[in-house]
Length: 224
Image (cartoon, rainbow, N blue to C red; front, top):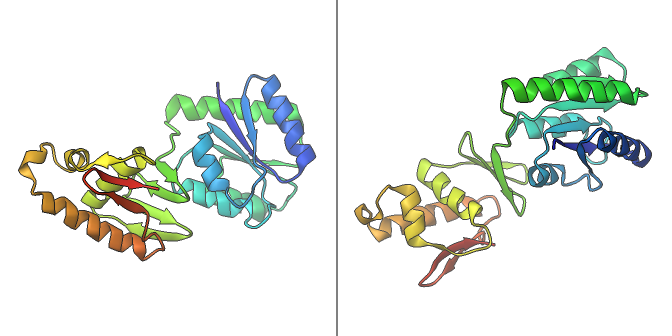
């Protein structure tokens, strides 16, 4: 079942949209907390997004740009704005279509179906990121994002973060991390992992994440 994320601050409009898309066999989720849209997107992992422009805090252009940094998921803008400049900005930020309010629900459903067919027939619209506690690990380019800040990670630092993020909230043994860095941990000096962990922690502390990686003595590491 295709999942659709509705990012619309007008309660009545988003409820009408939600009711209609569910009637057509889609699963829907309406955003109600507009400060954490990227986190909601990553947790829900929708197949398509309906995105208004006028939103609390940051506008739809901002969130479209943020989502495009980590995903190619189809995005349809729905807005009362009618100027050509708004439409151009929406497309330039990564939007796939633009519908002006008020609109026919039949037209919206038709556009959703058409875009889903194109998106999932010819390209993979997967989410290329892992999120935990507001920390986002961007898989394609070895970047870590946190509160509008970016860290460029080395290959080893990225692999360490990846295995820890995949096992978030649980202890990861040192041997398991070493296996993710090298094919056979027997070729690795244990101190080498410690050096890599310390370098990674130093980088994380620069963006306010000094306690993100925890040591569990005699067991391994975990993120909280």
